[in-house]
Length: 101
Image (tube, rainbow, N blue to C red; front, top):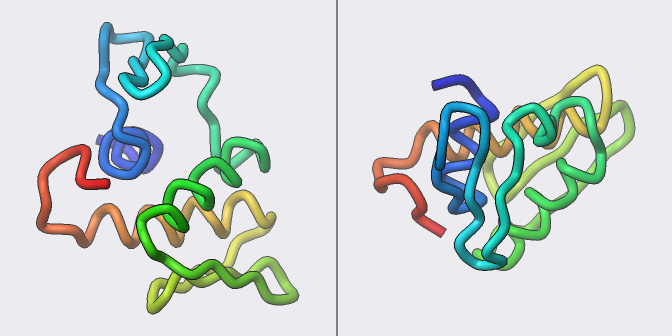
């Protein structure tokens, strides 16, 4: 799995419905895989921030595109990239199954 897939499954709670689309069971909608690009789209990255905050993580952004969620910190070329990297660090280090939030 790549970073985006790990974030979609473990943080967003989405299921891969087919090879080219996610299913969001909370909203009952399908999301094409190509349309969820949090490292390149700040709106997508902020959806991750919202989801993590709902789970109790505290988000902080610093100058220079550096962010933190509690103890997970990351820096990126853009704010969206930094958010994605920090979220991936949380999701990838979790020992909980997919859909843990």
